[in-house]
Length: 342
Image 1: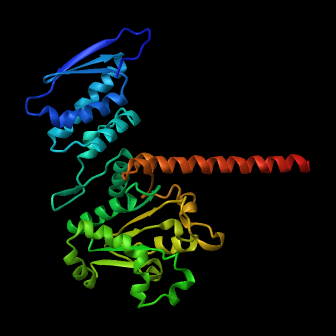
Image 2: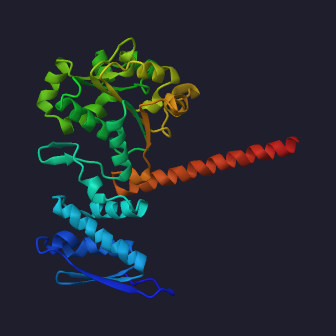
Image 3: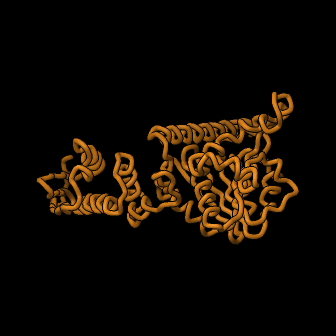
C-alpha cells in the first residue's frame, strides 16, 4: 500500500526476520498475512529474502514495525498465526498502543486434547483478569464475546486446581414460562433445552465420559435459577448465564446465595431481554444498586470482543446504531408533542 502523501518527509526502516522463523509462518501462505497488514496500515512494505523494509510517515512506520515485532513474539512463544490472529493483533494495537497482543493471546486458561482456551481480545483479557481479582464479576455484552465460555473455562480451571469443590451453572428458563408444566417428559427433560448451551460448553472442556459421574457426585450441577432459592453455596464457582432474563428480585435472590470460599460470575446481554409483560431486567439495574460495593467487578464487552465470524461484530454495531436512531426519533416525537401542547 502506498505511503500517505503529505508535508512530512517519508522515512524507512529495515529489519531482518530471525533465521529460526520461516518467512511463510510470518507472512502467510501466498503472503495472505502480509496483504492483511498492508491493507491495515498506510506504509509501503517491501520484502527481499528475510529483509523487510517499511516506508512511510514516522508514526505509521513505527506502528507497522511494532505489528511485525508482536507477530514474531507470538510465533516465538509457540502461538500459530492465522488471519484472525493477525487481524485481532492489529486491532488491539490500534485500540490500545500500550497493550501487547503477545501478552493477551498467549494467556492459557485451560488446555484439553491439544486445544487451548485463551482470551482473544483486550476486553476478554480484562474480563478474565476481573474474575481472578473479584469475588463477584458481571460480564455484560453482546452474543459471541465469550462471556459464558470464558467464565466456564475459569470455573473448570478453579475446580482442577482445587480452588473450589464444585461448579454450579444456572440460567433462568424464561422462555418456558407457565408453559413448562405442559411440556412432555420429566422435569429434567423439560428444562434441558434451556440448559443445553451450558452442557455444550462443558463438553468442550471436560472429558464427556466423566461429566455424568461428576454430576452424580454433585461436583458439577446444572440447574434452573429457581433451584437456587433458599440455598447457601459454599466452596463453589457459580455462573449465572442469560442474566438479562432475571427480575430484580431473582437477581437479589441469586447474589445472596453466595457462601464462603465461593466465586460468582454473572453473564448477560442487556439488549436481549425476554422477560414477559415488560418486567424490568435485574441485570439492567444491578450496576446502579451495587455501584461502590467492594470486591464486585463489572466488565463491558463490545462488538470488538466478538470472536465469532467477523460479520457478527458488524451486525451487533448495526443493530446498536438502529436502536440509537430509534431512541433519538422517540425523543424528537416527545419534544414535538411537548411543543404542540405548550
